[in-house]
Image (tube, rainbow, N blue to C red; front, side, top):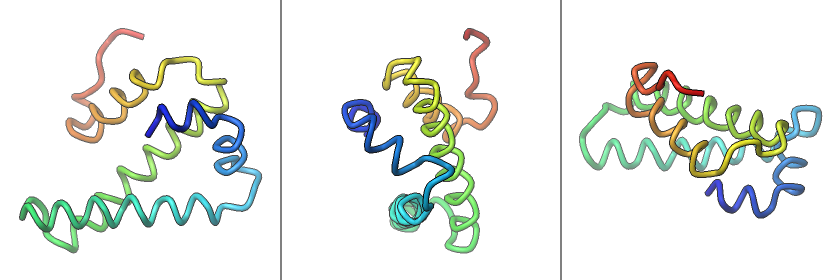
Length: 100
């Protein structure tokens, strides 16, 4: 997904710009949250009630990391941003490495 964002930088930056209408961001959040919830319920990993809160936390944080990346003119490769998001989503702050 981040490769797509990088390839379509201008449009994604415009659609996720904080000063713009946030309806795109809300739709994106809902799609991503529903995807996570469905997967967790299918795999019996997390109950529905908890999955709604956890997915909101993960998706919101991920979107804001992507927005920060776009504002910084994609200063890191998409693979590195994906790794940061995945590590934190899967391991919490234990997923953070000491290197910059």
